[in-house]
Length: 481
Image (cartoon, rainbow, N blue to C red; front, side, top):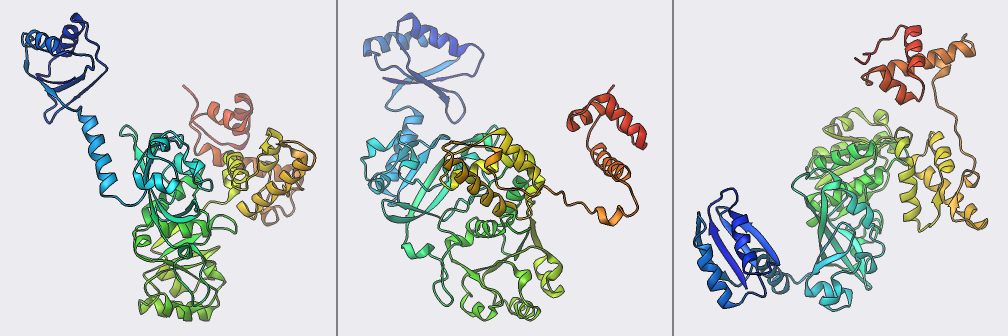
């Protein structure tokens, strides 16, 4: 039996109500507080008999502030559940599932059960990746900076577009730790929808058959959050970054995160193929390495943009803006996104390496020595170079029969620090050049460290050594009180 109690909101009234149920030895299995005015108490007592209810009802009427007691068929949460379940079963024809932070399926409609090939009762409690093994679930569950619309997935040989809607906790809706789960909607599509188009072919495709998940660790998180702000806009978007920094992935994600992804496809335009724009009027145009275009091709692109014939939206990537024509840069400078190079994210390089190994299907683990060696490199090719080194190291570890990748497994890494020593080191000896570098480091750190003790911890040296060096170079930092 379920009971609804209407009462005043005063201190101790709930305790008095529960004491009456306890006096008659009635077990309450669940309870809820709510109502439009916050004046309702809902209690579920499965073993409550009618005679007990009548006796308890008379006892409750003597509680000050209690206005009404009545039996109900469903608790509010049960009613919401059944209403939603009914809607999903009879209104939504597409597969819909909800998962928890560990990737377990919590609920699903009948269409989802049919798509997975199991009964609806069996689906709850199963791992989502059992049915969609290529879905990068860990990255999706870690945070919000991932494309959540139009992800291509294959389920029992059929192709779907997956829309991913995270469920956030109200206490902390902005952070990745606030993710309570997600709701997934699968829309059936033709497999050719996600195939890369050829020149003159279909315009509906993405750059890769696997979902373009954005890793949001370290300084990359700021770029990911910025992408979420810029992706829904209609102005051209310029993504700037070194080779291998992830520009192509971010360009594809910008389209997936845009509302245009539901209405049109994306066409990747090859170098200087401005004539292809005539076929892209209804598509989003993505251009990789626009800075490699010839000056003539760039001017033709400017003309097409002025005539508004460059598609519904232009997304371009460049390694540097120096080679862009001034007129083209003027069109593209409204919305810009700069990706950080890998060498500026050394503290999280181990996490990136583990994700790359997992994506490649490698089961080896990185030990501390290998992570330390990776951190010493400046990675001029960024994630491309890191991926190649990890795959080579993984193969070496596998040949020696080990499941752990150690420093000796890694190929020779270039650890030469790219410093502009030739610009200021002429005529200086080793000691003078090292002192110049040390002073530059201390000047940089003293701008952000609040005290000499914090600076000492940051540099890994003693507080006295820091104080002596600051005194030597005439630098000042706030001392601890």
